[in-house]
Image 1 (cartoon, rainbow, N blue to C red):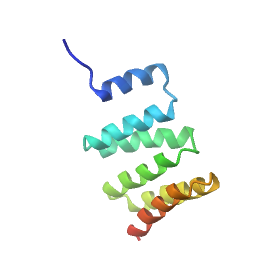
Image 2: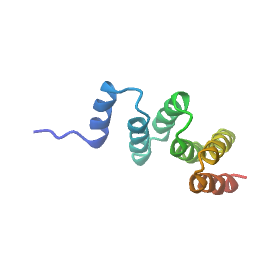
Image 3: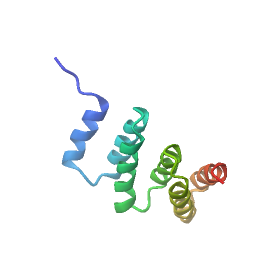
Length: 105
């Protein structure tokens, strides 16, 4: 008997709810944990394209882009994420992204 991996279960759930930002975020994090930063960036990109109000996606997208050496893209994503987190009153997320942004400068 074959047991599905966490990633496979998430992918199956996404077939039913392809616009679910949290499921896409989980899938992106699975890609990142496997060392597939390009796959993670694709998932984060989908989230950012459809849900501009999800600060964790901006934070992790910035981290992943930085790992890929795409520093200017990482900066742009983090700056946008900081604005969104701040507008939501999420100073913790904004502060974490600001800290990451400062390491890229």
